[in-house]
Image (cartoon, rainbow, N blue to C red; front, top):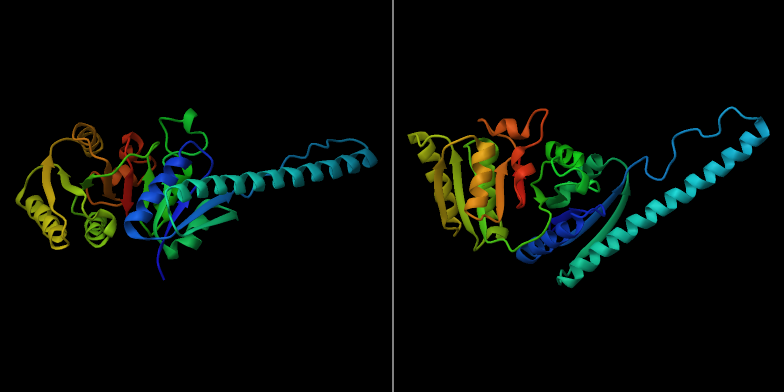
Length: 284
């Protein structure tokens, strides 16, 4: 069974970018795209009892009216969800993606992703959700939850799509970083792209060997990769390199054994994903 690109769309300003990136992935990998919109359990339902302490007959009538309003609200929310999916489909069709399916689901978004990701090659999500314009310094709460829970690569789309030609791999020698390099070597998505594998720290013999091993693995797959070591703190040094060297995408492990670990695991979300203006692919 061909694994799908699962693209989460929510109607935010990032949704169009998610669709554009999904089309790019689909065209390079010949993978079908499934557009997914998840309605939260509470969407469309008014939880508060607005009837107050009024007489029984009037209270009953008001409760009936509130129930009817809740039903109408739920229908409107579902209708909006279907409209979001149809708009997303139109973007993919314009990009000449052949296989597109849409799915409207109710429930928790992380639980939903867990259910559908077995058929996915990648989970695609926007960096921020519907409140994006009001939270430019913060990541979407759903993004962090999905990154922590997903067993598939999570592709975090930037605010706008631009052609991807030059890829930075943040490499710390950890298990997920090695898995990221292996994924790049095996995936048609990266064929023909310029790949740079970079470690933040000191150029010790161990670091040089790890980078050479990564380069050799990519070269065996037909990918000519450059390697390098830069000084500084990962969260600032890598972000600076992305801007100065004009990288189009970052790939990094979601778990590491160095300082990069603190960027993904813990109480705060990753500074790399927050600050980078290009897509970031996170591998477990």
